[in-house]
Image (cartoon, rainbow, N blue to C red; front, side, top):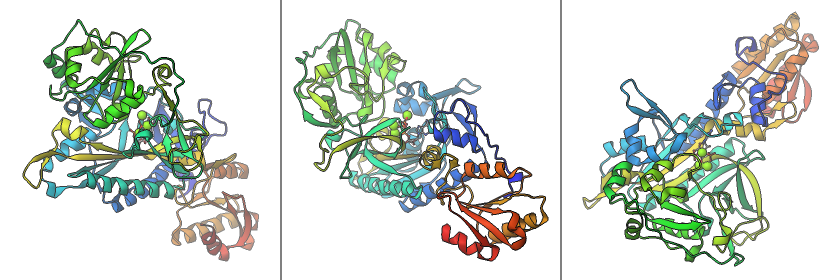
Length: 564
Ligand code: ATP
Ligand code: MG
Ligand code: MG
Ligand code: MG
C-alpha cells in the first residue's frame, strides 16, 4: 500500500482531551477519529489491526467448537421484556422507537436474541451442546465513556453463547473457552491475568475475567506473588480472615409496609410470573431501610448475600416472608450472580412498585454493588476483605494488587435466561428441561487499545509483529531522487511478491516528518531507501529495539526474515 493513497492523518501534538497513552497514540498515529462521545471511526490502519485480532479470535473460537453467526444489533423490546432486562438494565441500554412507535433496543449484549433463536430452533437434547458466536458492534450508553476506545458507547465485541443439557457439558465448554481466551490474549502479546470474578470466598469458579495488567485499568485485581491465584476485588470480596473489630451488629429489622401491592400487580409490571418468586433481604442502614432484591433462585445467592452482609447474622426472608413483608413477591429482574443484588433504598418500602421503577434511576439503585465502596458495611459485619500483604487464599504466597483492563469475560449463566424465556428441550425421558447456558465475551476494540497501552515508547506505538497493521514500512527519503524512487519501487514489488504486507511512504515530505510518522505508526521493521540507493544499500531499523543496520538489497529478504 502506498502511503500517498491511504488515509493516515497523523497529528504532531497530543490532543488535549486524551489522557492515556493508547487514546493519544491511536489519535496521533491516525488510527481513530471521534464522531461523538464514546463513538469512533476506525481508519484504515485500525481496521487492519481489528481484522488481525478478529482472525485470532475466530481461529480460537472455531478450535473450541464455536460456530459463527451474526445477529441483529437492533432488537425487539419484547425479548428484553421477557428476560426482564428491559426494566433492570437501566439507562446503559440504548432504546429507540420505530415509525410505528414500537420499542427497540440496540444490542448491549445478545443473551435475549440468542436464547429466543435457540428456543425456537432446538427442541431436543440430541442437538445439544451447541456454541454460537459472533463478532459485532455493541451499544452501551456508558455513564462515563472515556479513554478513547477503551470505554466506548459503540464498540466491537466477540460474544459467544453455549447451550447444554447437563452441567458437566457446560463445565467442559467453559474450560475450553477459558483456554481459548488464554490463547487469544497470549497471541495478542498481552500481559494479562485470568481472574476470579466471583466470590472467591465461595471458591467461585463460575465466572472469570481476563485482565490486561495496566496502570490505566479501572479494575483492581488481587493476585498471589507465587501462585496462579488472582481475583477481581470488586466482584470478589474475598474474605480471608474473620476479625471481630466491628461494633455491635445491629439487629436486623423486618418492616411491614402499609402500601401493599398484590402479587399480580407487581408481577404483571415486571412481566414475570408470580411463581418466579425471589428472596429478599431487608435491613436497616443508618436510618434507611435497605431492600436487597435477590434475582434468580440459586442457593448460592443466599450464601453470597450472607457473606456480603454479615454472614450468619443476616436473616434472609423466605418467599412467603417476603410476601408478608412487602405485600407482594418480586420477579426475576436480571442476571444471576452477585451482580444480581440490587439495593433499593429510601421509600422502597413505602411503595415497592415505584421502587422497582426507581431502581433504574440514578442514585436509586446500585448494580454490582460493592459494600465498603458503595456504602459503609464494616459496622454491620465482622468480615474483612482481602488486602495487599495477606496470605493468598490458596495458601501459596502473598497477595499483591494491580490495576487491570477487562478484555474478556466468561460466565456460567445457568438457566437464568432459558427459564425466563422458556428455552427448553426434551430430555432422554421426554421431559421438558430448561437449557443450561454459558456466555463468553471479548472486547475486540478494547483489546486493540490494551495492546497499545502495553506496546509503546516515547516515539509512538510498537506493534507486536502479528498484530501490526503492516509488516514493513518502506521509506523513500526523497522520491524526487531517481535512484531512490527506482530502488524503493523495486523493493516494494519484490517484498510484496515475497508475501510481506508493506506500507511504502512515497509522500513528498521532509525526511524528519516521514521518520517521525513511521515511529508513531509503529510497524515492526522500517526499511529506508536514502543516499546509498545508487550503491544498492538500504537501512533496516527494528522498531522495538531501535537497532539499525545497513544491508545490500540482495540481503534484505534474509535480514527481514530473521527479524520477523
Ligand atoms: P466493564 O466492567 O469494563 O464495564 P463489562 O463487565 O460491563 O465491562 P461485559 O458485559 O462483561 O463488560 O462485556 C464483555 C466484554 O466487552 C468486556 O470484557 C470488555 O472487554 C468489553 N466491553 C464492555 N464494555 C465496553 C465498552 N464500553 N467499550 C469497549 N469494550 C467494552
Ligand atoms: Mg460495563
Ligand atoms: Mg466488568
Ligand atoms: Mg464483564
